Length: 67
Image 1 (cartoon, helix red, strand yellow):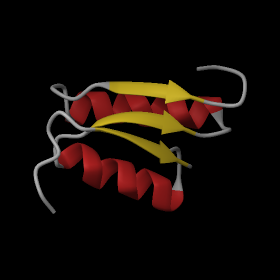
Image 2: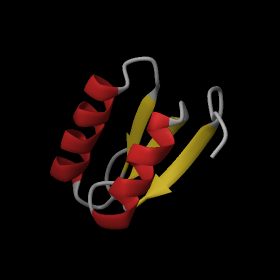
Image 3: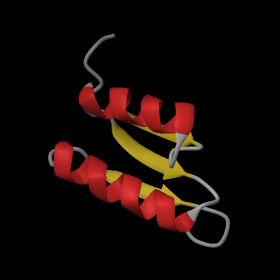
Image 4: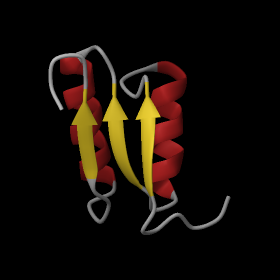
């Protein structure tokens, strides 16, 4: 997969399962991510984990009652 630095990608279901795995791979390639999931607590943890691993990337989160 190519370098994704400067690209913004929306990842649905980002708090667990395949969405989380996709977010991890995309972040490792340099993409800035908007993370979407209905589970706010798990999404907050995912965002914090990704930010600590990939501090140069930007991460936003969006869910059922927040954005």
